[in-house]
Image (cartoon, rainbow, N blue to C red; front, side, top):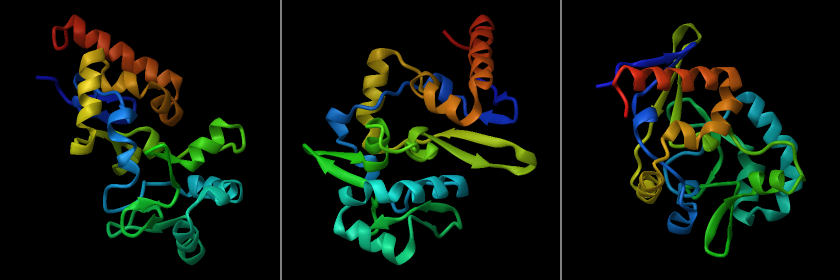
Length: 197
């Protein structure tokens, strides 16, 4: 069994190394943007960036989403006191749009089309990893299991793609390239020590 893993000030659940994952939009149709009981966790900096991008994506938002944003803004405090993106009807993120039977993030779509500078909240990009802020600047990364992602788990197993490798880009975005290199080195050491195959 793997010990608790740590890279810098970041504690990692061993599942992030041992579990396999690869999003399969053809199977799930982006259901993670419309299921759940709260929006995506966001930081104050991300809220500012989202507010800057809202004008550009406004025409792609549903009338219901526009009404929610007009009423409470792009984010709110959930029951746990965390800042999260606003949602419509108790479930859909206000930034979802539906095309060809699939749910997409209008923020990410605008970014990929070169219309904005902000992609999407890093919490969305890091899923299925959930980030928890601990004391003394320490951060914990946990692997979140969710039934709607069963096809992503299956696809990850078929591709033999560990969670941390699937999420290389957002992990670098959140913690930096040097941190990610340290993570890879730690994984190699665990293999050498017989903890991993």
